[in-house]
Image (cartoon, rainbow, N blue to C red; front, side, top):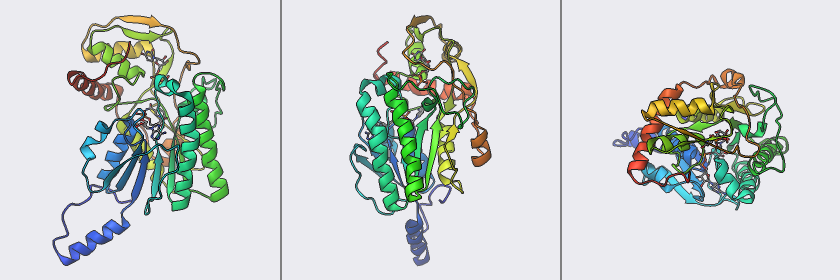
Length: 347
Ligand code: NAD
Ligand code: UDP
Protein backbone atom coordinates (compact mmCIF):
# COMPACT_ATOMS: atom_id res chain seq x y z
CA UNK A 1 0.00 0.00 0.00
CA UNK A 2 1.04 3.56 -0.64
CA UNK A 3 1.71 5.62 2.42
CA UNK A 4 1.22 9.33 2.98
CA UNK A 5 -1.65 11.57 1.94
CA UNK A 6 -2.90 11.10 -1.61
CA UNK A 7 -1.62 13.96 -3.82
CA UNK A 8 -4.46 16.12 -5.09
CA UNK A 9 -2.49 17.86 -7.84
CA UNK A 10 -0.36 16.46 -10.63
CA UNK A 11 -2.90 15.84 -13.40
CA UNK A 12 -2.37 19.19 -15.16
CA UNK A 13 -0.04 17.72 -17.77
CA UNK A 14 -0.41 14.66 -20.01
CA UNK A 15 2.24 12.89 -17.95
CA UNK A 16 0.49 13.98 -14.77
CA UNK A 17 -2.80 12.55 -16.06
CA UNK A 18 -1.06 9.29 -16.90
CA UNK A 19 0.53 9.13 -13.47
CA UNK A 20 -2.82 9.91 -11.84
CA UNK A 21 -4.50 7.08 -13.83
CA UNK A 22 -1.70 4.72 -12.90
CA UNK A 23 -2.00 5.68 -9.25
CA UNK A 24 -5.74 5.12 -9.39
CA UNK A 25 -5.25 1.68 -10.96
CA UNK A 26 -2.66 0.64 -8.39
CA UNK A 27 -4.46 2.18 -5.46
CA UNK A 28 -5.43 -0.20 -2.66
CA UNK A 29 -9.14 -0.57 -2.03
CA UNK A 30 -10.50 -1.52 1.38
CA UNK A 31 -13.85 -2.61 2.73
CA UNK A 32 -14.35 -1.53 6.35
CA UNK A 33 -17.31 -3.43 7.82
CA UNK A 34 -18.51 -1.55 10.89
CA UNK A 35 -17.13 1.65 9.35
CA UNK A 36 -19.66 3.94 11.07
CA UNK A 37 -18.68 2.70 14.53
CA UNK A 38 -16.17 4.11 17.00
CA UNK A 39 -13.08 2.24 15.76
CA UNK A 40 -14.33 1.77 12.19
CA UNK A 41 -14.74 5.50 11.56
CA UNK A 42 -11.17 6.17 12.70
CA UNK A 43 -9.92 3.36 10.47
CA UNK A 44 -11.79 4.79 7.44
CA UNK A 45 -10.16 8.18 8.07
CA UNK A 46 -6.72 6.63 8.37
CA UNK A 47 -7.08 4.60 5.16
CA UNK A 48 -8.31 7.62 3.17
CA UNK A 49 -5.28 9.58 4.46
CA UNK A 50 -3.08 6.70 3.27
CA UNK A 51 -4.47 6.98 -0.27
CA UNK A 52 -6.98 4.12 -0.26
CA UNK A 53 -10.41 3.91 -1.81
CA UNK A 54 -12.67 2.93 1.09
CA UNK A 55 -16.07 1.21 1.08
CA UNK A 56 -17.54 1.47 4.58
CA UNK A 57 -20.28 -1.09 5.24
CA UNK A 58 -22.57 -0.61 8.23
CA UNK A 59 -26.18 -1.18 9.25
CA UNK A 60 -26.10 1.60 11.90
CA UNK A 61 -26.97 -0.74 14.75
CA UNK A 62 -24.59 1.03 17.16
CA UNK A 63 -22.77 3.14 14.57
CA UNK A 64 -23.64 6.70 13.58
CA UNK A 65 -23.52 8.31 10.13
CA UNK A 66 -22.27 11.44 11.97
CA UNK A 67 -19.00 9.60 12.64
CA UNK A 68 -18.30 9.72 8.91
CA UNK A 69 -19.57 13.23 8.17
CA UNK A 70 -16.02 14.44 7.54
CA UNK A 71 -15.64 11.88 4.71
CA UNK A 72 -19.04 12.46 3.07
CA UNK A 73 -18.56 13.54 -0.55
CA UNK A 74 -14.88 12.47 -0.61
CA UNK A 75 -14.29 10.98 -4.09
CA UNK A 76 -12.59 7.89 -2.64
CA UNK A 77 -15.17 7.15 0.04
CA UNK A 78 -18.39 5.16 -0.26
CA UNK A 79 -20.78 4.36 2.62
CA UNK A 80 -23.06 1.36 2.17
CA UNK A 81 -26.04 0.62 4.45
CA UNK A 82 -25.83 -3.17 4.70
CA UNK A 83 -26.22 -5.85 7.39
CA UNK A 84 -23.26 -8.23 7.07
CA UNK A 85 -25.45 -11.13 8.13
CA UNK A 86 -26.59 -10.97 4.50
CA UNK A 87 -24.07 -11.73 1.71
CA UNK A 88 -22.36 -8.64 0.36
CA UNK A 89 -22.36 -7.42 -3.24
CA UNK A 90 -19.11 -8.20 -5.07
CA UNK A 91 -17.04 -4.99 -5.09
CA UNK A 92 -14.33 -5.43 -7.70
CA UNK A 93 -10.79 -4.28 -7.08
CA UNK A 94 -10.95 -4.74 -3.31
CA UNK A 95 -7.55 -5.62 -1.88
CA UNK A 96 -8.28 -5.59 1.88
CA UNK A 97 -11.34 -6.46 3.96
CA UNK A 98 -11.42 -5.25 7.57
CA UNK A 99 -14.17 -6.71 9.78
CA UNK A 100 -15.06 -4.39 12.67
CA UNK A 101 -18.81 -4.95 12.48
CA UNK A 102 -20.14 -6.00 15.88
CA UNK A 103 -21.37 -4.05 18.90
CA UNK A 104 -18.55 -3.99 21.47
CA UNK A 105 -20.20 -2.53 24.57
CA UNK A 106 -21.66 -5.14 26.97
CA UNK A 107 -25.10 -3.44 27.37
CA UNK A 108 -25.41 -3.08 23.59
CA UNK A 109 -24.24 -6.56 22.63
CA UNK A 110 -26.35 -8.17 25.37
CA UNK A 111 -29.43 -6.21 24.32
CA UNK A 112 -29.87 -8.34 21.17
CA UNK A 113 -27.72 -11.42 21.90
CA UNK A 114 -28.79 -13.53 18.93
CA UNK A 115 -28.08 -10.65 16.58
CA UNK A 116 -24.65 -10.23 18.21
CA UNK A 117 -23.77 -13.92 17.87
CA UNK A 118 -24.95 -14.16 14.27
CA UNK A 119 -23.20 -10.90 13.32
CA UNK A 120 -19.91 -12.46 14.44
CA UNK A 121 -20.53 -15.91 12.97
CA UNK A 122 -22.67 -15.42 9.83
CA UNK A 123 -21.38 -11.90 9.19
CA UNK A 124 -17.74 -12.97 9.43
CA UNK A 125 -18.47 -15.96 7.17
CA UNK A 126 -19.98 -13.64 4.53
CA UNK A 127 -16.98 -11.31 4.68
CA UNK A 128 -14.49 -14.19 4.54
CA UNK A 129 -16.25 -15.57 1.47
CA UNK A 130 -16.07 -12.15 -0.15
CA UNK A 131 -12.35 -11.80 0.64
CA UNK A 132 -11.69 -15.30 -0.69
CA UNK A 133 -13.68 -14.57 -3.86
CA UNK A 134 -11.82 -11.28 -4.46
CA UNK A 135 -8.37 -12.60 -3.47
CA UNK A 136 -8.24 -9.86 -0.81
CA UNK A 137 -6.55 -9.86 2.57
CA UNK A 138 -8.90 -10.18 5.54
CA UNK A 139 -8.48 -8.73 9.02
CA UNK A 140 -10.77 -9.81 11.84
CA UNK A 141 -11.16 -7.67 14.95
CA UNK A 142 -11.47 -10.32 17.62
CA UNK A 143 -11.34 -9.39 21.27
CA UNK A 144 -9.65 -9.89 24.61
CA UNK A 145 -13.07 -11.27 25.66
CA UNK A 146 -12.12 -14.57 24.03
CA UNK A 147 -9.88 -15.05 27.13
CA UNK A 148 -13.02 -14.74 29.30
CA UNK A 149 -12.28 -14.38 33.03
CA UNK A 150 -8.61 -15.29 32.62
CA UNK A 151 -6.63 -17.56 34.94
CA UNK A 152 -3.39 -16.52 33.20
CA UNK A 153 -2.22 -12.95 33.67
CA UNK A 154 -1.21 -11.03 31.59
CA UNK A 155 -2.80 -12.82 28.64
CA UNK A 156 -0.54 -14.11 25.85
CA UNK A 157 -2.08 -15.31 22.56
CA UNK A 158 -1.28 -18.91 23.55
CA UNK A 159 -3.74 -18.76 26.48
CA UNK A 160 -6.96 -20.52 25.46
CA UNK A 161 -9.31 -18.69 27.77
CA UNK A 162 -11.98 -19.32 30.39
CA UNK A 163 -15.40 -18.47 28.92
CA UNK A 164 -18.86 -19.34 30.25
CA UNK A 165 -20.54 -20.70 27.12
CA UNK A 166 -24.07 -20.12 28.43
CA UNK A 167 -23.73 -16.77 30.24
CA UNK A 168 -24.90 -13.34 29.03
CA UNK A 169 -21.46 -12.49 27.60
CA UNK A 170 -21.31 -15.69 25.53
CA UNK A 171 -23.08 -14.15 22.51
CA UNK A 172 -20.08 -11.87 22.13
CA UNK A 173 -17.24 -14.05 23.46
CA UNK A 174 -18.27 -17.29 21.77
CA UNK A 175 -19.33 -15.43 18.60
CA UNK A 176 -15.83 -14.01 18.33
CA UNK A 177 -14.24 -17.37 19.16
CA UNK A 178 -16.23 -19.00 16.34
CA UNK A 179 -15.27 -16.12 14.03
CA UNK A 180 -11.60 -16.80 14.82
CA UNK A 181 -12.14 -20.50 14.07
CA UNK A 182 -13.72 -19.65 10.71
CA UNK A 183 -10.77 -17.39 9.88
CA UNK A 184 -8.28 -20.22 10.29
CA UNK A 185 -10.59 -22.68 8.49
CA UNK A 186 -10.38 -20.32 5.48
CA UNK A 187 -6.59 -20.35 5.81
CA UNK A 188 -6.51 -24.16 5.90
CA UNK A 189 -9.15 -24.77 3.23
CA UNK A 190 -8.58 -21.88 0.80
CA UNK A 191 -5.22 -20.35 1.84
CA UNK A 192 -7.04 -17.03 2.36
CA UNK A 193 -4.70 -14.32 3.65
CA UNK A 194 -6.26 -13.84 7.09
CA UNK A 195 -5.06 -11.79 10.04
CA UNK A 196 -6.71 -11.76 13.49
CA UNK A 197 -6.30 -8.89 15.97
CA UNK A 198 -7.35 -9.55 19.56
CA UNK A 199 -8.36 -6.02 20.53
CA UNK A 200 -8.22 -5.00 24.21
CA UNK A 201 -10.27 -2.16 25.78
CA UNK A 202 -9.93 0.91 23.60
CA UNK A 203 -11.23 4.44 24.18
CA UNK A 204 -11.20 7.83 22.46
CA UNK A 205 -13.22 10.43 20.59
CA UNK A 206 -16.34 9.20 18.73
CA UNK A 207 -17.34 6.75 21.45
CA UNK A 208 -21.04 7.32 21.98
CA UNK A 209 -22.09 9.14 25.15
CA UNK A 210 -24.59 6.32 25.71
CA UNK A 211 -22.07 3.59 24.76
CA UNK A 212 -22.27 2.14 28.27
CA UNK A 213 -18.60 1.26 28.68
CA UNK A 214 -16.47 2.54 31.51
CA UNK A 215 -14.71 5.52 29.91
CA UNK A 216 -17.83 7.01 28.30
CA UNK A 217 -19.91 6.41 31.44
CA UNK A 218 -17.37 7.90 33.87
CA UNK A 219 -16.56 10.92 31.71
CA UNK A 220 -20.23 11.69 31.01
CA UNK A 221 -21.10 11.24 34.70
CA UNK A 222 -18.20 13.39 35.91
CA UNK A 223 -18.92 16.20 33.44
CA UNK A 224 -22.61 16.35 34.36
CA UNK A 225 -22.14 16.16 38.14
CA UNK A 226 -23.58 12.66 38.55
CA UNK A 227 -22.20 9.85 40.69
CA UNK A 228 -19.75 7.56 38.97
CA UNK A 229 -21.22 4.03 38.81
CA UNK A 230 -18.73 1.48 40.14
CA UNK A 231 -19.85 -2.07 39.37
CA UNK A 232 -18.91 -4.45 42.20
CA UNK A 233 -15.94 -3.49 44.37
CA UNK A 234 -14.17 -1.62 41.56
CA UNK A 235 -11.03 -3.64 42.25
CA UNK A 236 -11.35 -5.44 38.89
CA UNK A 237 -8.82 -4.24 36.32
CA UNK A 238 -8.63 -3.34 32.64
CA UNK A 239 -5.87 -1.95 30.40
CA UNK A 240 -6.86 0.99 28.20
CA UNK A 241 -5.54 1.73 24.72
CA UNK A 242 -6.03 5.06 22.93
CA UNK A 243 -7.80 4.76 19.59
CA UNK A 244 -4.93 6.15 17.46
CA UNK A 245 -2.55 3.52 18.82
CA UNK A 246 -5.08 0.79 18.19
CA UNK A 247 -5.67 1.85 14.57
CA UNK A 248 -1.91 1.92 13.95
CA UNK A 249 -1.73 -1.65 15.27
CA UNK A 250 -4.56 -2.85 12.99
CA UNK A 251 -3.06 -1.22 9.91
CA UNK A 252 0.37 -2.72 10.62
CA UNK A 253 -1.15 -6.16 11.14
CA UNK A 254 -2.99 -5.92 7.79
CA UNK A 255 0.19 -4.85 5.95
CA UNK A 256 2.89 -6.99 7.58
CA UNK A 257 4.61 -9.72 5.59
CA UNK A 258 4.64 -12.61 6.08
CA UNK A 259 1.14 -13.11 7.50
CA UNK A 260 1.37 -13.91 11.24
CA UNK A 261 0.41 -17.54 11.78
CA UNK A 262 -2.05 -16.83 14.57
CA UNK A 263 -3.90 -14.01 16.33
CA UNK A 264 -2.02 -10.98 17.67
CA UNK A 265 -2.98 -9.04 20.82
CA UNK A 266 -3.40 -5.28 20.21
CA UNK A 267 -3.81 -3.30 23.40
CA UNK A 268 -2.06 -1.22 26.03
CA UNK A 269 -0.39 -3.27 28.77
CA UNK A 270 -0.80 -0.58 31.47
CA UNK A 271 -3.35 -1.96 33.92
CA UNK A 272 -5.69 0.08 36.14
CA UNK A 273 -8.38 -0.80 38.65
CA UNK A 274 -11.85 0.60 37.98
CA UNK A 275 -11.65 2.70 41.16
CA UNK A 276 -8.33 4.18 40.01
CA UNK A 277 -9.91 5.07 36.65
CA UNK A 278 -12.79 6.82 38.42
CA UNK A 279 -10.40 8.99 40.43
CA UNK A 280 -8.17 9.71 37.45
CA UNK A 281 -11.15 10.80 35.33
CA UNK A 282 -12.35 12.93 38.24
CA UNK A 283 -8.97 14.69 38.40
CA UNK A 284 -8.72 15.19 34.64
CA UNK A 285 -12.23 16.64 34.35
CA UNK A 286 -11.43 18.97 37.25
CA UNK A 287 -14.71 17.99 38.96
CA UNK A 288 -15.47 16.87 42.50
CA UNK A 289 -16.69 13.32 41.99
CA UNK A 290 -18.61 10.92 44.17
CA UNK A 291 -19.05 7.21 43.64
CA UNK A 292 -22.00 4.84 43.84
CA UNK A 293 -21.76 1.03 43.82
CA UNK A 294 -23.95 -1.07 41.52
CA UNK A 295 -23.96 -4.88 41.25
CA UNK A 296 -21.14 -6.48 39.28
CA UNK A 297 -22.53 -7.76 35.94
CA UNK A 298 -22.53 -11.57 35.53
CA UNK A 299 -19.22 -13.05 34.35
CA UNK A 300 -17.46 -9.66 34.46
CA UNK A 301 -13.74 -10.55 34.05
CA UNK A 302 -11.74 -9.78 37.22
CA UNK A 303 -8.60 -8.67 35.45
CA UNK A 304 -7.31 -8.04 31.97
CA UNK A 305 -3.96 -7.02 30.57
CA UNK A 306 -2.44 -7.91 27.21
CA UNK A 307 0.94 -9.51 26.73
CA UNK A 308 2.03 -7.64 23.58
CA UNK A 309 5.38 -9.37 23.05
CA UNK A 310 4.14 -10.73 19.71
CA UNK A 311 2.89 -7.35 18.42
CA UNK A 312 6.21 -5.76 19.38
CA UNK A 313 8.18 -8.47 17.59
CA UNK A 314 6.06 -9.01 14.47
CA UNK A 315 4.70 -5.50 13.90
CA UNK A 316 7.26 -3.30 15.67
CA UNK A 317 4.17 -1.90 17.41
CA UNK A 318 3.50 -0.67 20.91
CA UNK A 319 1.20 2.02 22.29
CA UNK A 320 2.61 5.54 22.42
CA UNK A 321 -0.23 7.65 23.86
CA UNK A 322 -0.16 7.94 27.68
CA UNK A 323 -3.50 7.40 29.42
CA UNK A 324 -3.70 10.98 30.73
CA UNK A 325 -3.16 12.43 27.27
CA UNK A 326 -5.66 10.09 25.63
CA UNK A 327 -8.22 10.74 28.34
CA UNK A 328 -7.78 14.52 28.00
CA UNK A 329 -8.62 14.30 24.26
CA UNK A 330 -11.56 12.02 25.06
CA UNK A 331 -12.92 14.32 27.76
CA UNK A 332 -12.77 17.26 25.33
CA UNK A 333 -14.75 15.22 22.79
CA UNK A 334 -17.43 14.26 25.32
CA UNK A 335 -17.69 17.85 26.57
CA UNK A 336 -18.49 18.88 22.98
CA UNK A 337 -21.10 16.11 22.68
CA UNK A 338 -22.79 17.17 25.90
CA UNK A 339 -22.83 20.82 24.79
CA UNK A 340 -24.45 19.69 21.54
CA UNK A 341 -27.23 17.94 23.51
CA UNK A 342 -26.06 14.33 22.93
CA UNK A 343 -27.95 11.34 24.37
CA UNK A 344 -26.62 10.57 27.87
CA UNK A 345 -26.11 7.12 29.46
CA UNK A 346 -29.15 5.90 31.40
CA UNK A 347 -27.43 5.84 34.83
P1 NAD B 1 -19.05 0.02 17.77
O1 NAD B 1 -20.29 -0.58 18.34
O2 NAD B 1 -18.82 1.47 17.90
O3 NAD B 1 -18.93 -0.33 16.23
C1 NAD B 1 -19.46 -1.49 15.65
C2 NAD B 1 -20.04 -1.11 14.29
O4 NAD B 1 -20.55 -2.29 13.65
C3 NAD B 1 -21.23 -0.14 14.42
O5 NAD B 1 -21.09 0.90 13.49
C4 NAD B 1 -22.44 -1.02 14.09
O6 NAD B 1 -23.53 -0.29 13.56
C5 NAD B 1 -21.84 -2.00 13.12
N1 NAD B 1 -22.58 -3.27 13.05
C6 NAD B 1 -23.02 -4.05 14.06
N2 NAD B 1 -23.66 -5.12 13.60
C7 NAD B 1 -23.63 -5.02 12.23
C8 NAD B 1 -24.13 -5.83 11.18
N3 NAD B 1 -24.80 -6.99 11.43
N4 NAD B 1 -23.93 -5.43 9.90
C9 NAD B 1 -23.26 -4.28 9.64
N5 NAD B 1 -22.75 -3.48 10.59
C10 NAD B 1 -22.95 -3.85 11.87
O7 NAD B 1 -17.84 -0.81 18.40
P2 NAD B 1 -16.28 -0.53 18.32
O8 NAD B 1 -15.81 -0.23 19.67
O9 NAD B 1 -15.96 0.39 17.21
O10 NAD B 1 -15.75 -1.99 17.94
C11 NAD B 1 -15.37 -2.32 16.62
C12 NAD B 1 -14.86 -3.75 16.57
O11 NAD B 1 -13.74 -3.91 17.45
C13 NAD B 1 -15.90 -4.78 17.01
O12 NAD B 1 -15.77 -5.92 16.19
C14 NAD B 1 -15.49 -5.12 18.42
O13 NAD B 1 -15.86 -6.43 18.78
C15 NAD B 1 -13.98 -4.97 18.36
N6 NAD B 1 -13.43 -4.63 19.69
C16 NAD B 1 -13.54 -3.38 20.19
C17 NAD B 1 -13.04 -3.11 21.45
C18 NAD B 1 -13.11 -1.72 22.04
O14 NAD B 1 -12.67 -1.54 23.18
N7 NAD B 1 -13.58 -0.73 21.34
C19 NAD B 1 -12.44 -4.12 22.22
C20 NAD B 1 -12.38 -5.39 21.67
C21 NAD B 1 -12.86 -5.65 20.41
N1 UDP C 1 -17.69 -0.65 34.76
C1 UDP C 1 -18.06 0.07 35.89
N2 UDP C 1 -18.93 1.11 35.74
C2 UDP C 1 -19.44 1.47 34.54
C3 UDP C 1 -19.06 0.74 33.39
C4 UDP C 1 -18.19 -0.32 33.55
O1 UDP C 1 -17.61 -0.22 37.00
O2 UDP C 1 -20.23 2.43 34.50
C5 UDP C 1 -16.73 -1.76 34.92
C6 UDP C 1 -17.22 -3.11 34.37
O3 UDP C 1 -17.90 -3.84 35.36
C7 UDP C 1 -15.90 -3.77 33.98
C8 UDP C 1 -15.00 -2.59 33.57
O4 UDP C 1 -15.58 -1.42 34.15
O5 UDP C 1 -15.33 -4.40 35.09
C9 UDP C 1 -14.89 -2.39 32.08
O6 UDP C 1 -16.21 -2.41 31.57
P1 UDP C 1 -16.54 -2.08 30.05
O7 UDP C 1 -18.01 -2.26 29.89
O8 UDP C 1 -15.94 -0.79 29.69
O9 UDP C 1 -15.74 -3.17 29.20
P2 UDP C 1 -15.50 -4.75 29.36
O10 UDP C 1 -16.15 -5.27 30.59
O11 UDP C 1 -16.09 -5.33 28.14
O12 UDP C 1 -14.04 -4.88 29.45
